[in-house]
Image (cartoon, rainbow, N blue to C red):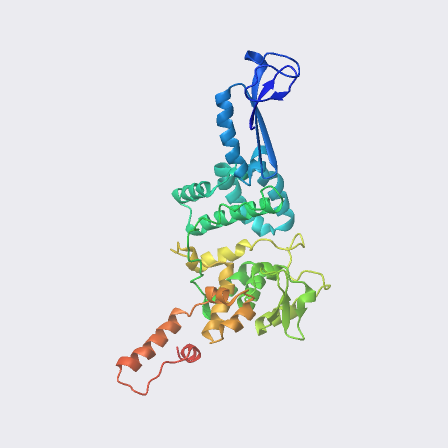
Length: 391
């Protein structure tokens, strides 16, 4: 029997229709009588004590529904608030296990958007509708599709860690997974020509030797900024003609062949101990975490970004890597070779960063036009390598 009459004197439970307590003899009317609701299901037992029969009947129906919910135990004991979980659990973990650049990039999304808009919600109560409203709010505030995508991905990561650490039940579905994130084209569309690279390096050399050296290595190896600043002398193999890139984005080390300018630069530097950094802060001697300001000043002085508002066309330090990968594509190397040279995890990433320059495309189009409409039946479509040498 799920509803019992409860004696307030001796605390015993009796049948629903009893009017006198069999244990203490109290008359179960008025203040001496309450109703205890008991529901058992799937090995779980819930009890509630109320003073009215109609309330007890309503509560009985609600408890039966609640016990069907596999997440009921988490809701019952009170799930941690998202804000508390982020500040007390996630951020301390991220500080120790994520890179500085990752934490620096995540911080604005957490402080400005996730905590203010969703922080008061209990972890267990976050649902796809909350996430959808969160996404709509970001879009209304004018955030770019990539920024909205990044905010949703970060929220999804936070909730995944909450589940992994037992803050959410094992069968709990991440509410972000059911939301279609905004699509965006993040491909770099600006690659510097060899002449532009030379001008940039000349300008940098006037302003900062360190910025010049970092840019030269990136332009002629395709290495990421973080890979260059992590180089130690033990990674430099001048006789063998290569570098070893460690601490890469995909957590895999790779061999980086040395082109002439890079080999000459490294040979001219004073070699340190195997664990010493090749490029370090001029004052601190520690690893460099930021691109030197001289780089952006040189770019501005050369007018590379003048009037450019689309970030895909703006020249940044990463443009040097993109230019190197683009040159590989223009030389006719396969996607597989480009993937290996650039350290991309998948062929799709290699194609994501490369494109045929406008000049080469124009040359190919001209040859195709001559072949189709120029009346020269012997003409042929040129290869990428031929187009590059003939332009």
